[in-house]
Image (cartoon, helix red, strand yellow):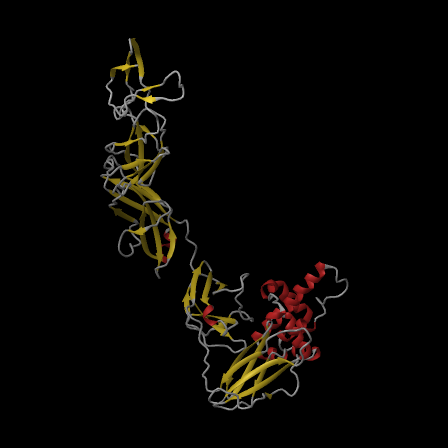
Length: 565
């Protein structure tokens, strides 16, 4: 029977109860205490499966120091409280107790079961890993059943009660293995107990219930009770009747993550007409049940999603929108009314556009939107104010022939690489979609759009060629609203390209020699940014050196110079 019970539990939650094995250098014995009626309850647990197996084999010893008011020990040596090592009950005793308590059978299988012991061909890596996982599972289940019953913890040699403790005293308890095999390192369990310290169990806090179609989901924070409760009892009652636990076994919050902050529990309801109340109690590692939480109550409700829809949206004088919707009459008695919400995008965010809740009838509402493009949704609320149904979004567009205002504050610059950076003041229109940027080499030419799509930012980057004789480039832009109405062009911006090209060379027209004088006539450079021209001469005897004949001399368009040779 024990073997069959263990297999059933392993198949259900084995992967969740397994405890990861730590390195031996991190091994320790963790201790919790409870003071009750001048008795000190000690509850401990090894931190890994290897240390647990050593405790099962050699047993535990418990020592106690009595502390003086100044915090120093009364005696230099501790008092040994256990005359012999505490070891788990024998297999025979556990099997006999399993007839009254199933958890005793689980403990017997975890400690004395034959499966999972490493043997045979140790070179078989898969078998070793399988046996290691089996040992982790046994360790996890042993600690689990000990957390649910103090009698089981006592049978596992993981609980002991000091009945000789005196009131108004402070003690240090130390829990150690009776033998420490060579090479094994661990930290014994040590805890300080004040006999005058009040220990009260808190009720679980902030229990929430979400009622649905013949079901309810409970949730409550468990991070508030870490180290206090290891399991919970969920209780249920028809409103006005006594609470009863749901199921025979406590509820253990479990997750694939090591740490969870909230517990979730789902229960089925026989119908949606009966009102039920729920509350939660915690179970300590000593097996003691704490006080109940505050009760939450409610009743199931039918799934109404998809039953509410907007069937008509009329635009009145291009100023108002009249909405009407439909909801099945069979479910109208379950709701208190409707809420109409509006957004400028289909995915929201939506905001209610009226105060309070609209009555069940008539299913109409008239709105005066400030935008030309509006999305509407209708929500149905139940008697408690919770959402029961929501319509799909409905798009309503008003006619919009008014373009945005012209863009202001256009500025920019061109760097030495030809990269143009423009920026401007954002337009204030609420229905603005973006901007379009245009460029030309001459303000009298047609401007060409250089933004390949409508841009939503108030800045733009462009690239122009610097290897051109056009000194300036011109930019303008328009604003575009959601209905693609374009504003007038902004006043154009003139940007000067950085000068990276040499001017056009002058052209000689003719030369004439008369005696020892040469007359030279030329046309100056046609480039409009020429500052001046210079005339150079080179002797035939020295063909590598040029002499500046007119340094810095301002020359006219056509110049005649007579040079004496």
